[in-house]
Length: 147
Ligand SMILES: [Ca+2]
Ligand SMILES: [Ca+2]
Ligand SMILES: [Ca+2]
Figure 1 (cartoon, rainbow, N blue to C red):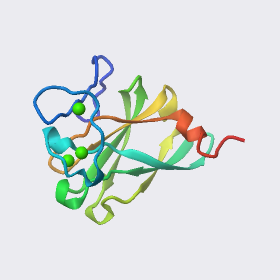
Figure 2: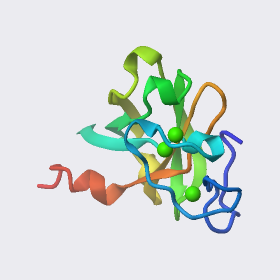
Figure 3: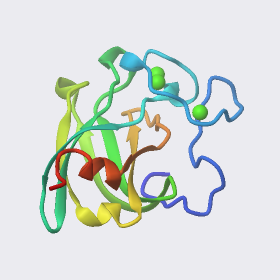
Figure 4: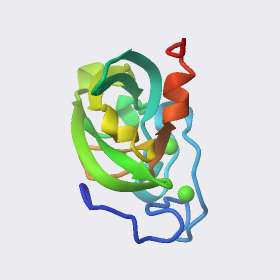
C-alpha cells in the first residue's frame, strides 16, 4: 500500500479502529499504548518548522510511539496531499529505535504544499501503517515565517 496514491478513495483512505468497522479519524494517544487495527499506530505529527527557502522546507516530525508499543525502525512516508488524501509520494524517513519519540528533521520540497496539505503515514517494522496525518501550509507560515 505504501507509495500508492489514494485520491480516488471516498472517506478516509486508511481508517483504523478497535473493531472491524471504520470509525473516522482516530486520535493519537501518548506513547501509542492503544491497540486495535494496525495496533492503532499513531500518525506522524509536525512539531516544528525550520528553514524555508525557495524550493525546500525543513520540518521536524515526531511519531509518538514508545518502543514497547511499536516495532522499530518506524518509517514515515511523506506525500503531497490533496483534500486529506495522498496525491504523490515524496520521500521516506526511517526512525531508528535509538531515536524513538524524538523529533526528526527532514527537508521536503516546497511543492509538498502545492495542494495546501502535507500528508504523512507512519509504518512500523511489522507493517502496521497509521492513518494519515496532515499538516497545512497555513501552519508553516503561521510559525513565525510571515513578515
Ligand atoms: Ca479510525
Ligand atoms: Ca495510537
Ligand atoms: Ca497503538
